[in-house]
Amino acid sequence: EPPFLPFSTAVERGPNESKRTESASEKMPFGARGPPGGGGQAGSPAEFYWGLPVITRCWFTAALASTLLAAVGMLSPGTLYLDWASVVYKFQIWRLFTNFAFLGKFGWPFIMNLIFMVQYSKTLEQDFKGVAADFLWLLLLGGSLLMFINHVSGLALPFLTIPLIFMTIWIWSRIHPNAQMSVFGLFSISSAHFPWFLICLTMLMGGSPVANLMGYFVGHVYWFLKHVFQPTAGHAFFSAPSVIRRLVEDEEVHTTATAGGAVRFGGGG
Image (cartoon, rainbow, N blue to C red; front, side, top):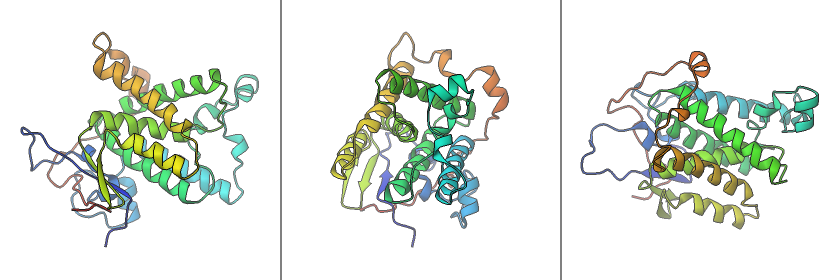
């Protein structure tokens, strides 16, 4: 029996799409059959981990490691949060990055946010067709805008991991608006409406939707400028600078029928 996941997808294909070739970007990673192109069910945590695209794998590792180390008292969250005074006057530049890699205390929110990070970061990264540098550039652009909004709005959120995760969810839902999301196996909604369902779920659980909305806004700005607004659509600005391309190698993309094969976890039908 595969582990239960509350959200899964079944993709609606257009008339010209092949039924034989599955795009890994249409599947949730916990349902992937091993590393991309590897074929077969992922048989161990190591196979699952190394099957993640490189940027998602690094982000997942940083978030999990920082939370584990903080839980056992080996790392203080106070050294990770976004503090502009420490960045400017103490040159603690790492805070510009570590504030996107901490998910707080262990618990149900931590588990759900980690699942969301892996699911939607992986599928969105695979939409970049193996150009990992461009996906990293997306995260850097989105993170920069989130920090700017966080500062000028006076929100002063110490960690922006959650808004960055929701940014990836929004962009994914715009690129794949017709995917059907199975929610707890009880009902289905289209992926285009999934971000709004998450806001309702957050509020029902007594949380604030601010982090969701910040991520959605930044994600929409990116998606609109890159894909919709004609003067900027497809502009070279959305491709990673050469310095990032030299640091991050492209990944080989497999399009075999077994790559990213789907198992509908928690789905009905």
